Image 1 (tube, rainbow, N blue to C red):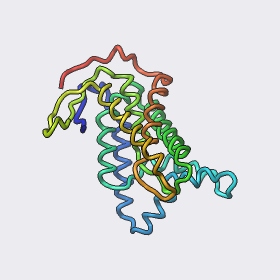
Image 2: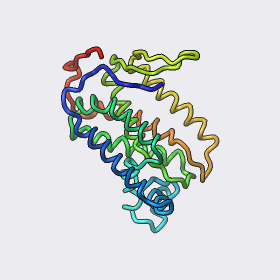
Image 3: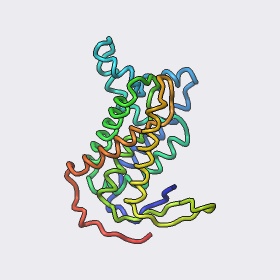
Length: 233
């Protein structure tokens, strides 16, 4: 299922959401400018490598070299589809969460969700030496915040029905819970097959980010949800 847009207009310009998208795109174009060897070193240095993280503090790795990738990895992507998919979801759902939390709180919320998602991924993939990159853990937190903040919103979505594609309105709670369940199922299956050098999708970063977003959004002061009206497309 591919969402197109929701039916909740933002009441303020989403400065942070736009800035995050711009930053991710800028960093991705920088990645494209690197040669293959430089790119690999760049990803290894700024991506989250579970075996490296869990080797500290027994190893001689500086703490900053272990902690910094949890933040820098949120702005790295492995390809066009990876980038576009993440930024698309952030654009659709991020503006309303930013509107509810306020700009600064939203930025802090986003970073904390990304950090928590990275930790969950590291713990559940402790033998993996492949670097994890992408904004999807933080964005999953935004989705978790959205589903509890605007459960009755409707999302215009491309849905395969039998042999045909249909564009229909789906309640946000159904769409995002379905998304979460798929991440959980794929993540559970991946636990049985993950090897030390296997790459792929960081399913548990998605699961962890979503759950953390649900928990954290209630702890942040924000605008009264009763103020938010609902309008059609």
